[in-house]
Length: 85
Image 1 (cartoon, rainbow, N blue to C red):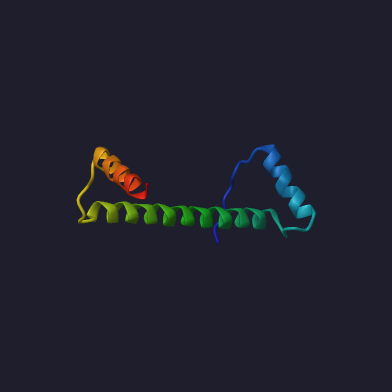
Image 2 (cartoon, rainbow, N blue to C red):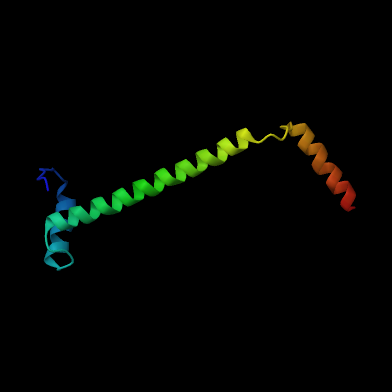
């Protein structure tokens, strides 16, 4: 373990102290460790979401099917509508 010195706004310090006094956490250090665990988990999930999005974009770019213009898509949709009527 490594000891750090940090500066927090009074309102954050009051919340930390209240949680310790209420018995939710054993110490201020435990509050901050839990906060870091939550933040690290959120950051990891964010990185995983970004990687998934990048993979989908790359799969789309690598798709061998020809790209269609907006006009071609409109024509295709219009032909589908005509077939349904």
